[in-house]
Length: 294
Image (cartoon, rainbow, N blue to C red; front, side, top):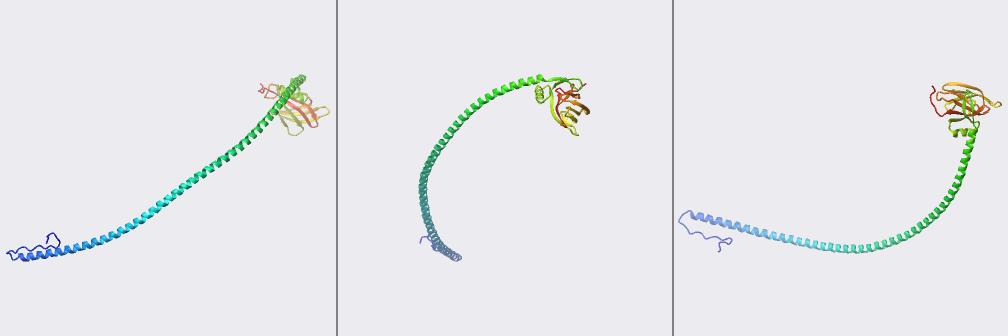
């Protein structure tokens, strides 16, 4: 027997002369036999474990193969579906491109049609505007001609008015006032008063003064009509200037009523042109230069 094989039992050593050698040898044999039996049992268990492991591995390999087969079929089906989807997408894209081109061509045609219509409309409106502008230009030219004529008439009227104004101013007179001082030019009616205002030598305030208890402000003075006599064209007024009351009694129309104030060196003048029942109409003339008297 090969000493390397399992279960090999070496032959007993040759007997020696010692009495203890046989029991020791016998114990060694028993120990070696027990070890071989243990190893044999372990080997058998190992074989069984290997068989069990092989069976388990085989089962797992079969499951893996089945799972792989299922996965492979599923992958193939998914890839096939992807190919179908891709092909469908390509066909849809091609159709969409074609439809988009058709829509674009249709839109271009519509825009061209609209552009032509708008162009014709704008051209017509522009022609209408041009004709209207021509008519307005003609009307303006006509109006300019009429205005030129009217300007000539106005210039003539202004020249005539200026001449008449100069004549009216020339007809005005200077008389002495009720204080004995030479007055300014005296207006006896509205036309002459306008001439004085145009001349601009003094400030003029027109007024219509009815008879009343309370005084009426005219310029920077207060006036009160006390009495009026239409038959004799006489009147009596009271004036307040610089907080002083002055009565002008039984005065006549177109007579300058003079009085001084602290605001001017020259006298103020009141001229009454009309005397009615409880009413007088006239104007107040004040100096242009206002200053404090010495």
